[in-house]
Image 1: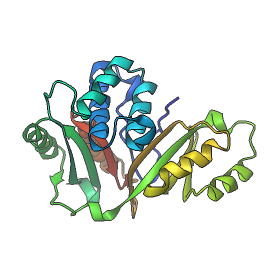
Image 2: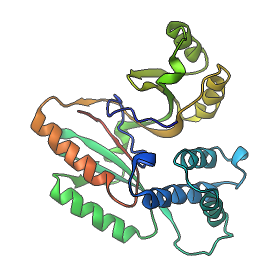
Image 3: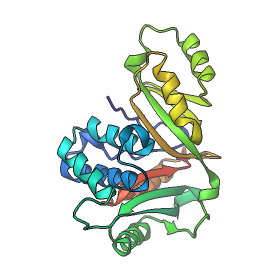
Image 4: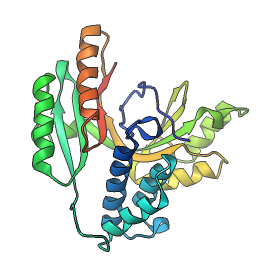
Length: 248
């Protein structure tokens, strides 16, 4: 079961393709398909030996994406598809309202269209496109593991927390929905395995970005500005993930 961190993740608001809750299921499947295709392109088509591909396929399955769609996406990635719509993964760095910053990960078959759409949104929402590494240096690459609250029932949470630290976990962010586990980016697969050995089912695993310094927003008008920009970026067809330093 995938769950959302209800907007209270302290270091990143991660766009998770709106999965099962998204009414535009076809658009969601397209995004997952693109993610799978890129993962297969970067490595082998064997899910067990391509960790990034496995993460993408697990997310697609959790959203009830049909097996045929998944198989076609893998074939496109390894070069046995129809050869159409060559995909690129492009990361944009953004300055938002009131010192907020964003990293926007996109997957697109037309980068001119994507950047045009992005500039339109930024122009309407007090945002500005940054140069390479103008924002990225303020974030760190990290692994993210989500544990649903149901997995925490009837467990000694203090003992579990110590076991997770022994398993290689760097930090634990707790919320009403469950725990968000932070790992070193190159330790994600190892930590995931260690957590499963504790008989805990993982809700979701992914690689993402952690802001080095959080921006806590208490002013309502500023919150509304940042939320408006975030929502507009989230609605872009080509967006895969969004990360920000802003907590609101």
